[in-house]
Length: 483
Image (tube, rainbow, N blue to C red; front, side, top):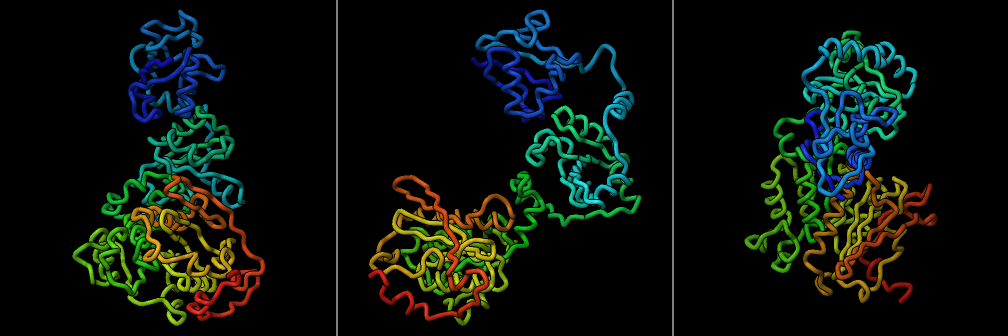
């Protein structure tokens, strides 16, 4: 059954700001459990350690005080209203100073000197800075996690999963951190201390601080949705802006990948292509437009991307990649995104990436099917040659021009390449190193396969000496050993 729970103002930040929530539950206790499952820390505000309603909180069911019903075991009916009413005014109020004095008696405090000793000796300590963003940008303790006080309940468990972890919370002067420590204690964290004197005293002592590189207000507006994700945040966005990604091919795969990498704020995009826009490209190559038919794909791509995000740098390489220029082209980039459509180029890209230890985000499409993976031997994964020792005969792998491709399919595969690229830049999640995702559009299925590093691979095996570049056109045109 569903009941309506009215949330008092002090508890609304925990439930996302809502004044009312709809919850399933046959009793008051079940309702509180279900709210807790969705919003960790809520129940501790209502119940004490013995599971009883706290003395400064009243709970009413349809206007009736549950103390005179059956307490937290009070039965509920569908459409009942549960009202939580904490003491906020009237009666015997405590002054701010009384509350602060009480916190100093109940919450553990630690001096800046003791915190520094912990850090110097390598004792495990997680620092949590609960100041506002502008304060944090002005300087903070080394390696501190930044969670503003107003977001502590919502974000702490995304960052610190271990409720027994040794936490040191600090603010500017040691007051807000006491309130934060009390909150964390109520949420079940068992090893929390507030740093007395806060950042101000730490800095006065001349102890080490860090001043982060910060985004301009312009960037903060543009990338605001990234900044609100803990796994990205300001530090992650700065990584994106500093990153350099090379896209080989401004076609079906390269276009969507480039578009979304530019949108994400990848600061430098290199694009390699020597072709011109053809009318048949427009079915899938979204950087190009009808009025640019006959224009070089490089010029068309640059025109679109520079209008879309003028703050990024686009470096053009209007040339065909060869053994003679491949290293010059890729050497200054962090990641290579392979959007090529032929086997000679794929093997060449692979060999150069193996030699220069660059991760290669690979995608391929055929009619209604596509594949995505990351070839990164330096990161512990296989290379393209581990997956395919030699190319298939032409009849088994016709080009898109011969076999056709569903126009939206390269968009899906190219976006997956962009996602994997962003994950590599940020160092988050589980990248597709040693795994390939195969997508079947007609069946609407994704399959994941494990890729193993070939211990006999001439190019990427342990201790291998780079055997040199080869005649890739001949290698891919010769008859297959299986044919």
